[in-house]
Length: 392
Image 1: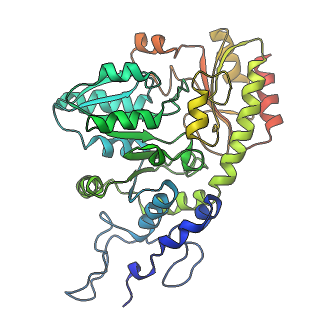
Image 2 (image 1 turned 30 degrees about the vertical axis):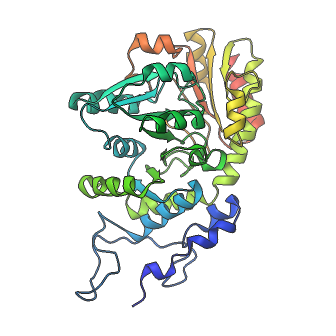
Image 3 (image 1 turned 180 degrees about the vertical axis):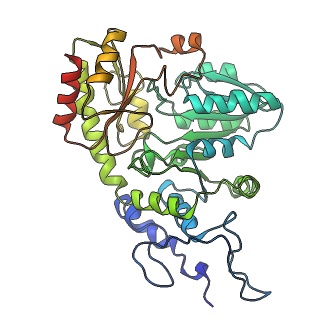
């Protein structure tokens, strides 16, 4: 019997442009039937054809061909050597954090996603892992935060929700000098706009729920690594925790990936127009968008990315204006999450960042008048008209 390995031909994908890679994936088609849509291997276990059988498939908690296709595809897109598809973005964060041990020290972006903060505060701290938050766009602040026990630097770039940008190359150089792993949450920009491995990162992760899936219809997380030794450590954790993404959800993300390039182009185009329109509205006091040339980290963005993504945060003049916007919008939906084809808006203080201490939020600028907008792929004039109606 031929093994699935006999059909794995990732090398031929290296000559393709990104737009082709996302469409064709790793194996792309089913190696056994030729099915154009990679099959959903909905099985819990696999037959051993003989005592000597080395097909590689045994039990779906450990490995599944549909999940494997997604993992291999993400390796191709990010330029990694090993990937792990898990059942949510937070499962991806937890998997990465499992590399830390008691007395280790982790440095993380100061306005990090509330769920990641909760993982650090509620899971790592009780077992003796030390941590501190730093504005990672300030390299000198990072250097001051380093300890002899620093083993990981966890970067969100752009950050959620304040849109700060970290210089991945500089931070990677610093991290490697002290023997620390550099992890980049690449959810906001995806490998279409940003490839952290090209700038020295050791681990890249995604909430696959967001732009990778792209349609607000699946929960998923992806971790990609460059180093095989790190991959082996994470593989053991996967076996133990049983967090592997199911075959149906793996297939949904694979299907979403096929249009990733097209969607990211449209998200980017729309976000630029919406951000500029918001800047001109008298009830909007400040707009946070990495595509503005006067953004303090604009030059870093231009150096390490090829686009700005679809995420915008903005502050309005009062909580009444916040209420008006959230109650009056018709096209844009008040909902958590981001990165889908539909435009979504949320209120970080009461939703995504409510776990963060109030005084910390205030210091970061995450106030009760801040809104975060995930710009979808609808007609941009309709998006702007909806905002205009809500702000009047």
